[in-house]
Length: 223
Image 1: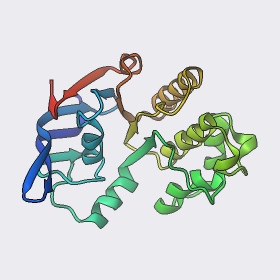
Image 2: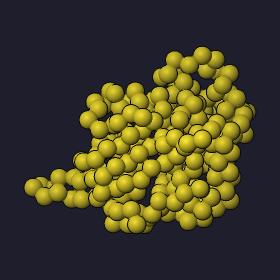
Image 3: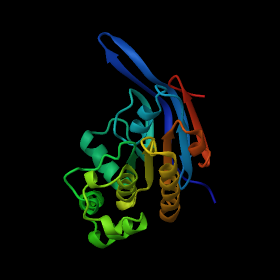
Image 4: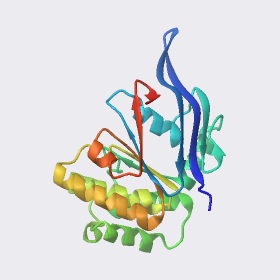
């Protein structure tokens, strides 16, 4: 049985124009990720790993090269098309949680479900909150939750639209060591149960060691 590549990155460059000069961020990045696998992108601060995640997830556009996500080449697509692809195929977990402060935990989990027009939204959203141990806090707002609890809501939200691939950017970066272990375990368990491909950006080598593949980046290049 041949493996399916859910993400292909081919000769990708990213630079920003500062005045009349180009500032290179990523240079000739190439790799492939198998469907259903767990992968970490590691490197020091400023190495370009978060920029690379943004390109792979369709949050930003490459200056050169091709990024093929679940068979779709993201190169040259409009912002509207990229947004539709993210909603259809991608889940996110961010370091700073990025929950909507005016919505309850349950309402935050419902957002991607609403965008996709999913059925049985309320039941599934509550089931996800129960799965991360927050069923009794569904009506709480982010400001009423601890950092670890907010990240649990973020995990539930990330899996709400049944993504093909989930990108996690320093998912435990704002959490203490004990809470980080809990969140990491939940992330991997949910990922296994869902059959999702997981890509983690991190500088934590202990976390990276839990993934099947490590892609090291330094100075904007894969090492």
